[in-house]
Each structure stands twice: as C-alpha cells, then as structure tokens.
Image 1 (cartoon, one colour):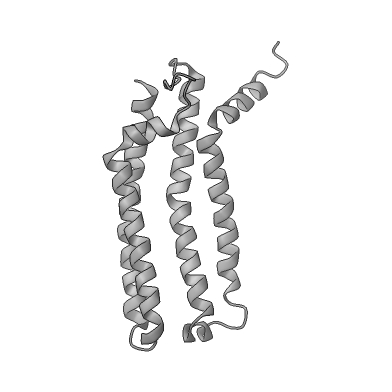
Image 2 (image 1 turned 120 degrees about the horizontal axis):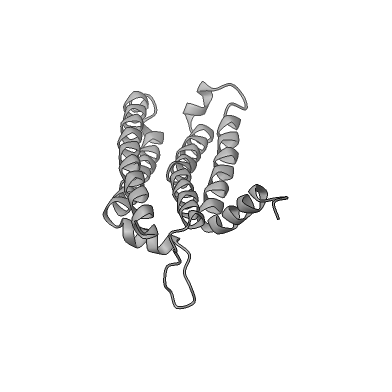
Amino acid sequence: MKSIELLSTGIRLLGIYAFIYAFRTGIYQYQAVMQYRSTLQDDMVAFTYLSLIQVGILFVASLIMFKFPVSFAKWLLPKTKENEVVFDGTAQDIEISIFTIIGVYILSWAIPDLFNNGIWWWYSTHSEFSGMWEQGGGTEYIINQIVTALEIAIGLYLCLRAQGLSNLLRRLREAGVR
C-alpha cells in the first residue's frame, strides 16, 4: 500500500468522525439555543449565527476530508524537489504517515473546540447569560482556550514535522547500538 493510500484512508476515517462530531455539536448547539431563547432573545441572535457558522465549517471540513482524501494526503506528505511524494515503503515512511494521521486527528477535534470555547467565552462575557456564573466564571473558557491552543500546536507539529519526530525516535531507539 502506498503512503498516499495509507494516509488517505486515515483522512477519510477522520472525515467520517468529523461528520459525526459536527452532527453532535449541532444538536448540542440547538439545545443551548432552544433552552435560553425565551429568556435572552437579543443575545441569542449572535450566538445562533456563530453556532451555525461553527457547525457549517465542521460539515464542510468533514466533507472535504471524506470526498478528497487523496488530494489532502498529497498536500500533507513530504515531497522531493521534483514535487514527487517521498515513500519507499520502509518502516520510517509508515511511521511518518501514522504521525501525520495522528496530527490530523488531533487538529480535527482541537480546531472545532477552539471555536466552541471562543463562542462560549465571548457569550459568557457579553450577555445577561454571564450573570448565571459567579464572578470570574468565564475563566474556565480561557483555560480551555489555552489547552486547545496547545493541542493545536501538537497537531500541527505532528502534521508538519512528522519526519523530524520519526528521526528523533529512531535516534533514541538506536542510541548506544553503534
């Protein structure tokens, strides 16, 4: 199996997962809108639009990963100067593909969390809804944003520097053998 096929299979599976996650997020956002719609009608308009945009972005991303996994895989895999994908079928190449798949997986749930936490953080500080928390209750969203930013950094590193991580692991495994 070529690395593009291996990576595109993982990306297609992540697309399916992202679709399910988008559907679940849409249900949760709909429940939140319906629950607070009658009491906070003015503030719910912006929240509703932001929720729709978030769910729409998730659906589009999942459909792109499901419909075009080979194009996505070609974009992610390392290339030579002649723009050909580098893959010899060695264990290191498979390891790089797996690190890249894990990176895409982390990004597929961390980026939506970034938007979700941001929406709730903004909403908790700009509405009557914020009175439902005690003073400083919105700080949990700031903490969640920091954790999500760290997750995005890890996912990006795994996607973009998978070969370097593979080389580091190989050096650690072979330390003292030579």
